[in-house]
Image 1 (tube, rainbow, N blue to C red):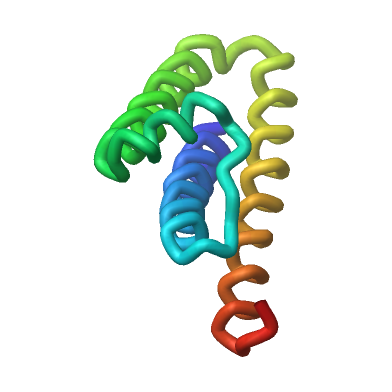
Image 2 (image 1 turned 90 degrees about the vertical axis):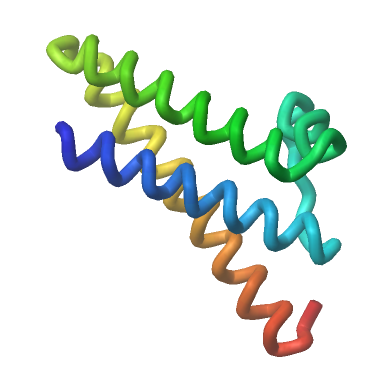
Length: 100
């Protein structure tokens, strides 16, 4: 389970970087209202909130890892963030090739 928590955390950081890259270049959009507010304040605040939230979730997952439902929640989070990071990669490739 520790590996899955680590994977989720890394995917979360990659999502933050992908969001920063895409939004700052105008071909991606942030859907989370809290993160939109943070981006409007500064990218530093965005990263602080994103990483702080991630660390709190990691701590909560670690404290409750003995419950089977936490395993399923973690698998779902890894799948969702994996898809988000894949989306960032596809957008980056399309932008790099001049498609968008």
